[in-house]
Length: 72
Image 1: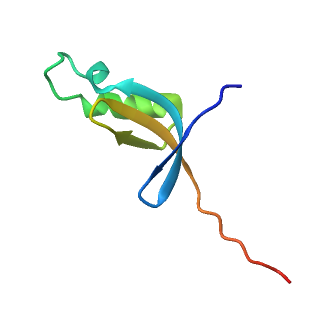
Image 2: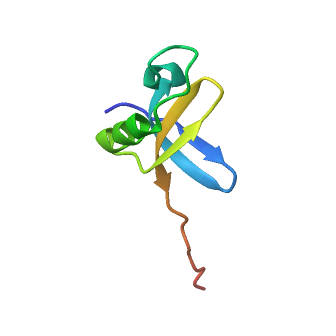
């Protein structure tokens, strides 16, 4: 079992399944990434959300909000 990191973005938390350089999804280093391939990779690794930094895509699983009630 591998340890996965948790990443918080805005008001949501995500488990990072995989990180890949943006350039991995482009035909050439100076081109924009092919977003269809990004979506296919997202599905292949079982992610439900993709976040992008300047250099990487983070393929994530959303951590659902937990609603709880305090019972006295």
